[in-house]
Length: 283
Image (cartoon, rainbow, N blue to C red):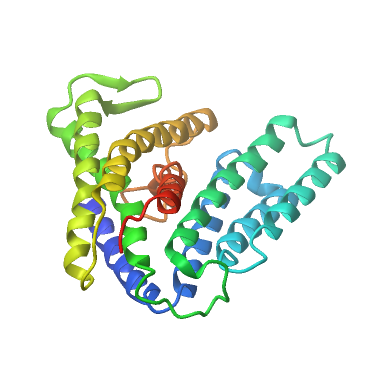
């Protein structure tokens, strides 16, 4: 537990630095998201042994890096098209050694991860829309608010589930998928995630001057994202068990790989982006 807490503390510090830099220009957020996304795509392919097929793994990683990096430009969807074409050409040329399962895994996984992480870049750019990478973020963007909301709710839900399950857990949630997860832990995670969403709004009313928080969409995020974060976590646990691995990596001691830490966010980030398009959450 000590190693897990130390790693979390270091991660929080890194996130705070990136949030501070991101308030001046989105390039810092985009680069960070690009690196994390590329790493997660590599970890996922490595879980199934596809990292050894360079004709698949290299395009997947490049795709994972380039789409978040280009998210504030007019070229954002070009990497998706190129990755699709390259992968399907590779599948045809390597049909004797690459199965349909490999093709679907190598295509669907990186696309899901990359589109989700790119939605974080989109929502953090605010009203500037598609613009050059080095544009200055104005005060109406509130990029730090959106990123914290996206990350905090599933991570607080995960932490709440971990501690509630550790001290109160008695009934197994999905023993065939994740033996350590409990019903009590899930309930604790749902409560922490919901309260975390409201807490983010409250905190940012004291960080930004003269802002108004609409708590209705925050309630929606707080109710839905903790639930879908659990399913995201469990779904990626199924993949781990099918691939016969414990963790996707070891880059984060006590947590595993980057994908082990972000798996619960993959289904959560797009919801916050959708909410931002239909509600005025912060103004």
